[in-house]
Length: 77
Image 1: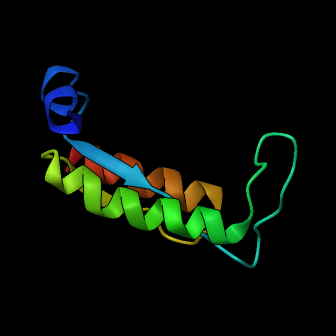
Image 2: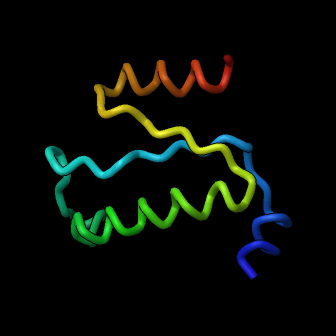
Image 3: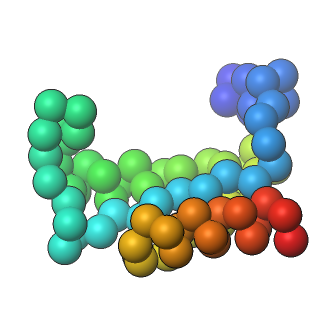
């Protein structure tokens, strides 16, 4: 079923994933699950996105401006 949904609801071919970053990870009202759940979800997405034909780019563990530069360079270049 996920393959059928993946083919019928396409987005941009490149997907950006932010890896779990234990040094800055916090739970709050928006992020209700713990770090272990975040790592599990990240691993699942790393496997699923390519199987649906997406190119996965891992965001670097850097400051916001550097991440913006990375995203823009991947989209333009």
